[in-house]
Image 1 (cartoon, rainbow, N blue to C red):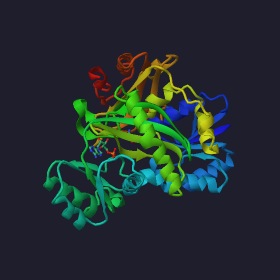
Image 2 (cartoon, protein in one colour):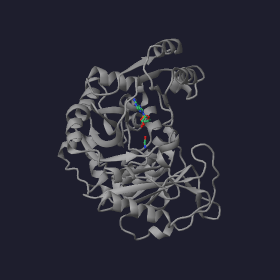
Image 3 (tube, helix red, strand yellow):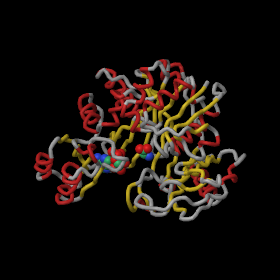
Image 4 (tube, rainbow, N blue to C red):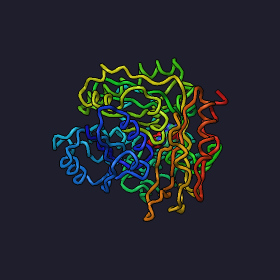
Length: 424
Ligand code: AMP
Ligand code: GLY
């Protein structure tokens, strides 16, 4: 089988590494990919939003399966374009990817189908939003409706902050058209957990849990980022929590989408908050998380391609999804200054230290080859250093040990990824 993966980050490297293990696969392409993905796949210089070029490439090269890792092309309808040409593709169609593409849609869906989430109101114009705030309780959460690179959520402690937030989202359009609508919702407290799942339109099978660290600095200080590290499983995701979510959240979401005439096939990523009143949905994503995929996929025992094909064909109920009884931790090596401004183009040394080391992974996020053929830094998040261990503590120690194997100028990382584990 020939597989095409769309995307260029650490998540896509993790997907490519899993696909490469499948005995069914003879060739992997990635559009556009990165230097690490280029070691196991042929990277083609096509951007993830160039739907016509991706579709033409898949046709010309007789691609048997295209896996779309990123949110923007999914929400934009890349799966529909591929399917229109009778190409097999994994991911939700545009009418289902709206689960991530519009927060107002997902909140209304949860309300309509009784899926636990924070209380909220949707707004189409800033005046009404500002009026609503006058009688609201603080802190309060403002969310731009559309995709905003994970940055469209503002937690406001005072009325003044919230008024400023509404203006920046809806009037000044800080997040572009994503701010044409917005959600204002109740602030929740508790542990956050991510649960990824495979969905075939009617059946859902959840993967092992994970937890992300979104803030840039130790102690959850600093700005929000795409994710500075993850661990899996989350010790806070207990059997009881799982039972609750299986009963009231997971299947309910899949059934709700089907009932709305928007059957969901692909990955649903449930961002959950474990509140005192039980687990509630913070957000849905329509794809693997980045860097959640980096700790979840290496622990999966199944052939990823087999599971993906079962989703496409609507026979996920026949798959026995299994994960290793161990743990994994991913520490992101970033460029100092991320997520604001940073320099790139620095050579990365020590990458071959990972060769032949079972249970250690160096997933590339922002890397490229320079004209001398060296692998250099090419983004804010550069590498996702991942290690497994019998326990979370062991995985954490292994991952931090492996962060020392690689070096580049302005290398930056958090030192407390998975530290919450110690408190569990
Ligand atoms: P989202 O993109 O919706 O996951 O929001 C980004 C982050 O904002 C989440 O991971 C939470 O840490 C935080 N957040 C979002 N919604 C809420 C809420 N209702 N209460 C408290 N924190 C929230
Ligand atoms: N790590 C969070 C996300 O992928 O959205």
